[in-house]
Image 1 (cartoon, rainbow, N blue to C red):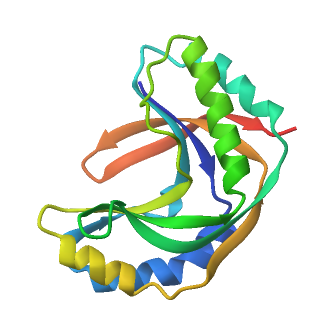
Image 2 (cartoon, rainbow, N blue to C red; image 1 turned 45 degrees about the vertical axis):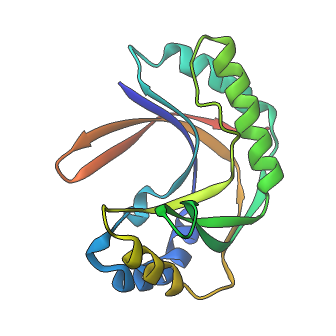
Length: 182
């Protein structure tokens, strides 16, 4: 099973993101592949293919140690950088430090249980698109189409272990277990 931990977005946050992301999609055209609004989430840790969820579920208990916190999305960017965009994202204006804390607490628990994770430090961002080969100009147009300002704000109350099943129409994500913050 293909697993990852995510911090979900509530419906009202996704609703607020619909207009700016639709503007980006229209401007970006075919050079950019956009994440479906209903699947937007913060990835805290990607585990890839695993024989089952038990060890990940046990590590996820570390998430319950955190308290609910406010998140605000503002700003845009690209990885690895704006000159060579491969991933387009929205930034975290408020709540970044607590989001990093939750991700690091989870990653420490996963490593203790033998999971191998990427070594790069966690950088809070909300991926909304991936750039197709030779789509750099499309990506730049997509980013430029998003009006600056705060896109959404909410109190996040849980993180989830998710299963991802790849198919012809893209990935389907299913919540295996939610871990409410204390």
